[in-house]
Image (cartoon, rainbow, N blue to C red; front, side, top):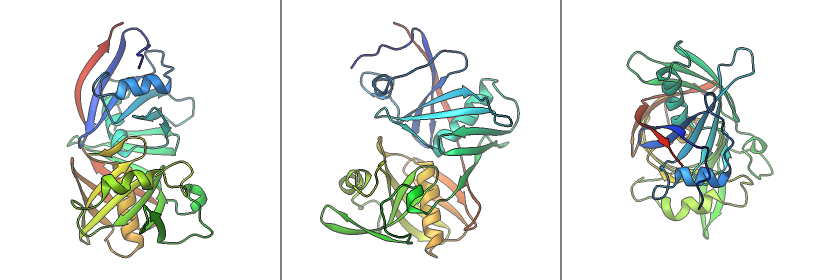
Length: 281
């Protein structure tokens, strides 16, 4: 794997509940990364190491502060990343790229609004939950609340939806014994998801608490997934299993997700800067 990257590439390592990112400022340095270069950056043995690479770019739209681009560890650009959005907000504030508390950002999945709170948490308006199969995208003859998938010869019931990127959420009895590593890759690449999917495994503790593991498209299982948390709460709300505000316990920590069943879904959680670095060639 080559690392033919721009000379003296400046980066910041950040994390949100253990979901880690390499953040690159595309305003102050020229970036035109290939998938191979992204894979090298994300590689934990030969590169910097991360789940996703995030790029901050200037916006050309009126009323939009920045463009936010997201690359999974496999080099593919994706539409949305909730934990990354919180890190994005903290980064642009810490770097002095913006001074206001409410930031509007354009992603491939649409516009999102980020609010930096006094305690350091970031509240994210993650946009509208989409259930139409063609919006996910998901191959189905009609829209349904629960679909049955053939996963390795076993029938698995999932709720399929998009929160800027595609998710298939199943309810499990115990998230620790769930077949995340066995079924996650099969669901991620299932033929009914033309662009792949994030596979969520949700254990309902009570109406205001869930435990969640997510096998992410292009990254594998991560310690936390912000859009996965939103998708799981939306799926639980739609199935009448959860209240409108839910604590989501992931392996890396806890997020709070709120959704009334219509309108935008909201996510709140921490984001932290780990270190700054420079690659010299």
